[in-house]
Length: 66
Image (cartoon, rainbow, N blue to C red; front, side, top):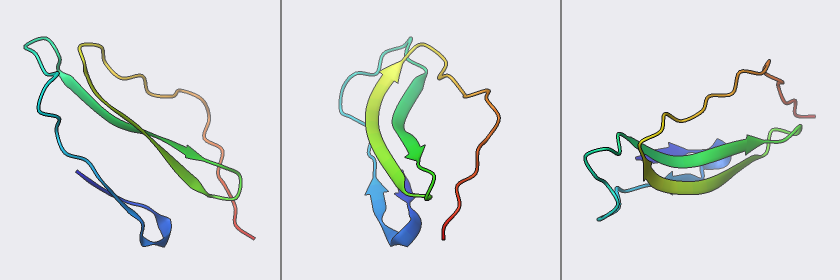
C-alpha cells in the first residue's frame, strides 16, 4: 500500500510475513494525526486484528494554513 502525503512524501506498507491467522480479518497500517496547521504525522501500527478498527465519531475540525 502506498500513502502519499502533502509535499510528496510517500510511505510504503507491505504485508508482514507473519501474524495473520484465520481469525484476523483486519490489517491496520497507520494512524494519521493532523495538527491545526495541517501538518500530518503518520504513526505506523502495522498489525493484524480480529477486532473491527474504531472510526472516530466526533465532528471534524478542519486545519488551516496561513
